[in-house]
Length: 316
Image (cartoon, rainbow, N blue to C red; front, side, top):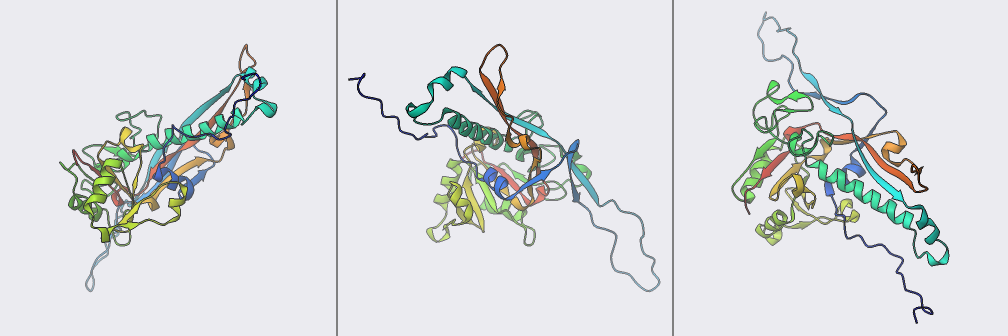
């Protein structure tokens, strides 16, 4: 029978490896900024007001110069995924017997692997504490306070301000247990006028606890365009509350990052092969196998840490 009947190969590939990262999806779709070149990425910020005030007749103006601006500075980071094809497989995966392209499946895997690398690094620090200095200058360093991370973007935090939600300091707290009151306090600390966090990223256990503490009339299912790329969320205080299954790897099991994504930038090189591009196939030495690399060059910049918060609960 095996000599007379072929196997039925379903021409579909089911992903049992990769997960979905809502903030990375938002960055790639809406907060992607290209750069042509340069030794570093510098993002200018304003951190102090000019001289001014009330006066009286005959009073002289204070004309002393004031330093009001500086720049966050970040190295360009490089990520890669290797794809190797064994030459003999090209002989086998051909003609009507090839139910699907093995090259195509490898490239799909390369894209998913790159997303996994970037999404995991997003929650690191890039300073050698949580992850390598070769990785993103991530959210743990950006959304923090001087006691935990003395500097960010090449600037010593206390040179600008020392208190939470001032200068380049965010709101950070480590409550003993999850509570809506703690989340509200953090959210309020990062709320300035019309500017407030618009995405709360957390782990599944915290998301479940959050959902269960809300009254049914407080739960608003999200129907925005982000839903159509593979994840669900609910609204709280006008912000999306989402699960990122990559967060716990570096961010912690019971952590919430409150993000104002309007000030979060994903810089991507304009060089095609470093803009989620492929190098092309290259022959291996002493073999007719081929290999190529899927690549990214850039970094993540949080230009206004004071508009964000981080909560690291000890328990739920």
